Image 1 (cartoon, one colour):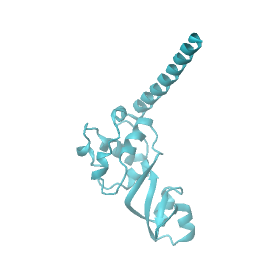
Image 2 (tube, rainbow, N blue to C red):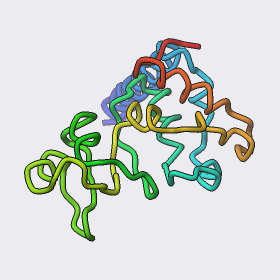
Image 3 (cartoon, rainbow, N blue to C red):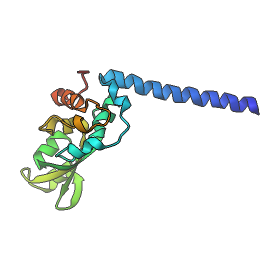
Image 4 (tube, helix red, strand yellow):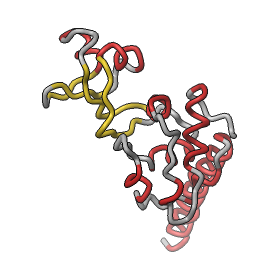
Length: 159
């Protein structure tokens, strides 16, 4: 039985190494390998005037996936802007949460709604100050670089 447990242990180690290796690979593919060093302290969130969960920019950089959804608390858009940006964006109208598509069907296009969940690449597009949350990061990660990278075309280009 000891040999079977050893084989199982080696197999699980190989799977874990493969998963961690894939994460490192995607971090380098995004052009922002520093994202792997973030320990999700959330200090950067304190400086964001739009109420973004800024650590999701880092997670998107680490996984090379700009389509991750992040939360926002202070971003207002018209129903039309939200609908054209992402039909699956979660918006809030008079305390009721719904997708942008549902809001588009129910309300006028020029009505202002609160964006509550949106894709990382869309959050970068609506960010008027290009991040500016680096100063609160205790390990000095260049989060603003990832935001500016996404703002140009919605993809990580490795700047």
